[in-house]
Length: 236
Image 1 (spheres, helix red, strand yellow):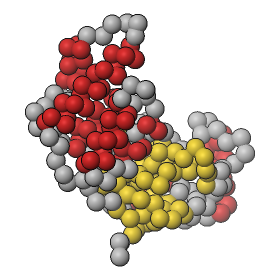
Image 2 (image 1 turned 60 degrees about the horizontal axis):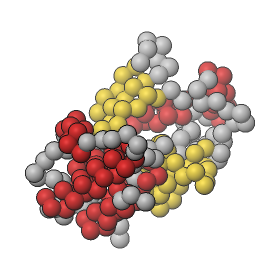
Image 3 (image 1 turned 45 degrees about the vertical axis):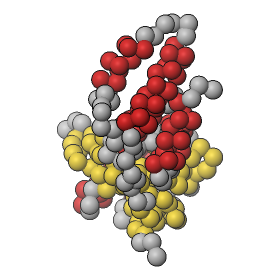
Image 4 (image 1 turned 90 degrees about the vertical axis):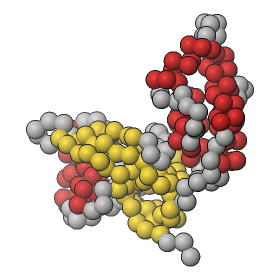
């Protein structure tokens, strides 16, 4: 039987891949509570792409496949402690088995960027009890990492697809194929020994929107992963 555990969940408008870095600015009270709890614990929470078709107590709902984020650094942006800056790195991906709703429903006309919105949520939380969790949690099971290797030929084929797509998207502007090699250099993607991480990074710079990357995160073997990246990079 697969082992499960309960972790905090942070739905975001992005897809985090294993071993990728993700800096975050934290300012909402519910996510400051999430970070505080993580720092007391193992420093880990789940990052999931927002599920635009569902909600949890009025809040953004997570897609069912996400990635564990490990906090590597946490510091105050200002001396007032109202904002935090955290550095994280992706670890294993996981599958949500059960969503655990936050104690607070999203208030009407809630503005996450306003001081008033933050005060509104904090006041509700104080009335309910500050020991209750304002953020979404989930019971999850870890997904084994893809440990298969990618050949240089497979990698070069993906790079050529990426170049063709970028050149096509730039039309009528002319983009030189050799010039795109400099882009690959900037992302440290010029290699003779490609790994899974290179595929994730190439997909990330080839996608227009985060939703295009979710199927790639959900791939469970090298064949499926390469096929999903090919679909992403093929000119429609």
